[in-house]
Image 1 (cartoon, rainbow, N blue to C red):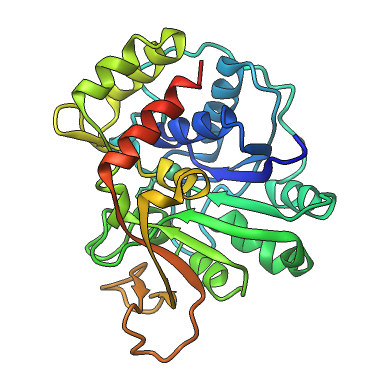
Image 2 (image 1 turned 45 degrees about the vertical axis):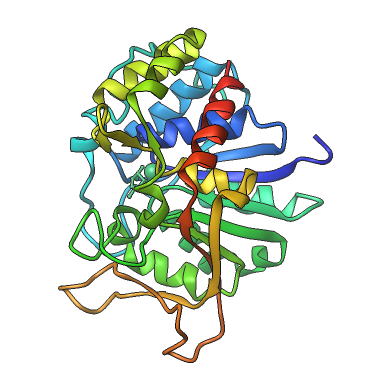
Length: 307
Ligand code: RIB
Ligand code: CA
């Protein structure tokens, strides 16, 4: 494990989360030290169950810690319509092994993992940023041992939860504001790339015959409403993992980002100041575009490793 990049995955599975987590678990370059759960796609209890189900399915011995059950200020509003009532509809995972579920809160588990690590830890945030914001506010000392926060969230243009709000950011815009202003190195993989990171029917048919994993993923794809099976399923959260494993698929801009937290009309809108109108120093690397062919090749070869 010595040369692997240490990561914590903060997540709200969620079918696209499940695929992203699987890719990270089976990557030769990543050492997943901890998975923390946050209310988002479905309730905290359900996203935690789904995380445990996934780890049990893959036989992976990774610590899990439950985090925030609602956003810092906003009313919690899930995405059952996209992922199904369970959050991972389509496949019967059975009862999970719960022995790796820690009794401490996710924020405390994150803190311990980070301060005990002999090398800086990367946080891959693929759900609302509530846990990450709480971590940075409660334990600012961890910042010195966080390598980078790579997050799926936001967009250069419009949203998918509200007119201008992408789901993860719009679910907890105040948390995003805390993270964006934290001074920690940030990398953003927003809708601009997530909407083009697609699994087409021909890809799904190839995945279907990749053993037990392929059968499970194909079954989940039948229920996933992030896009459509026929025109392409949106692998939003895999884009954050792709930033760690295959950044060459992206066009990346070093720029200033912020988030709207005051206006009701544009709450959760991410401001990506590519032209420097705000005259603020860059605080993030933003994926502004993706090469769909490189994504497809990377994605399929990554799934092949999840056996
Ligand atoms: O907007 C897409 C994001 O919202 C993804 O993380 C998906 O899992 C949902 O949480
Ligand atoms: Ca997610």
